[in-house]
Image (tube, rainbow, N blue to C red; front, side):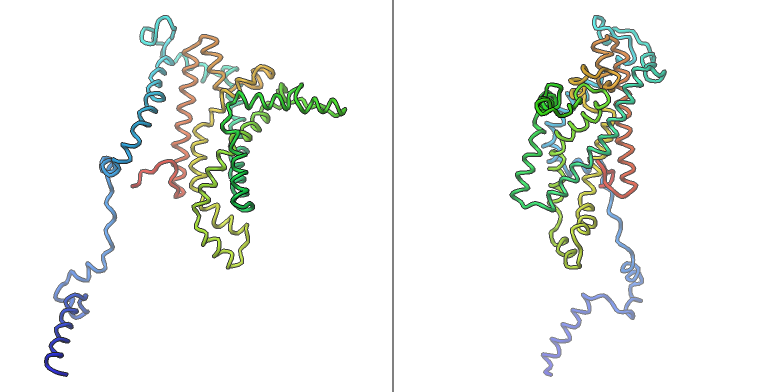
Length: 350
């Protein structure tokens, strides 16, 4: 090897030695080198609240108009809840009405029978909507995703989603024309000497009736949400399970359900927040034939006691307690989701 080539090799070797990590014998020249190499990476610094606001200022500006409307029409009216602590009369106004402390809350804590009946009906309806209504969109989304082609799936989605755009007035009218005493079914049954159905106006069937109405009207909306979540699943995961011999049930259990678990938990938490709100308009439209004992819920109780009966303070107290319980349920369910490693509706982590 010529001296020129040898010098080039030595120079390259020296350059590589300078760039490379020192060997064991060289660590004595820099005692901190080994410590720096074995020390774990420092934790990611926590970003402060104002730091996140500066980082996401563009998104916040886009959200500002919607936030303003929500604050104006949802949070500013909450100031009117002060009448829960007053003997409110419309001719006196909110600020001139005398203070009565917690007197209006006696209706909640002293066991008013009408309030307890409304609370019982509300809890039963809410429990049915969580246990029966909530899983229906999940099942429909899984069924559509597994069994139907894309073209048929879009048609079925449109059919399922259509009732969501109807008001409760129209939905109730449809059910009355179909299942009422003079409805289509009973008219057809009379013509063929078949037994008649007594559903509309039957107090014993009122809760199953409104539960079925909620499923018919809103199942399509939930199905669209869950189908959107399922569409984000990587198709290669299904192919990998199929290669391993896994069928549809195994793909469903190990891929699809874990992929949409976050969406399920998010919607379930939001539903728990509305546990004491079960649809004023839907129930109010159908109270007449069945009576208040079978149909009164907290929302209609607040209306009947406050707007109809003029007991503004007591109705405001019931509404305030209902809102506080809903908030507590959301915060509690979100905390439980965090304990199980889920994000929930919000997270304090960056």
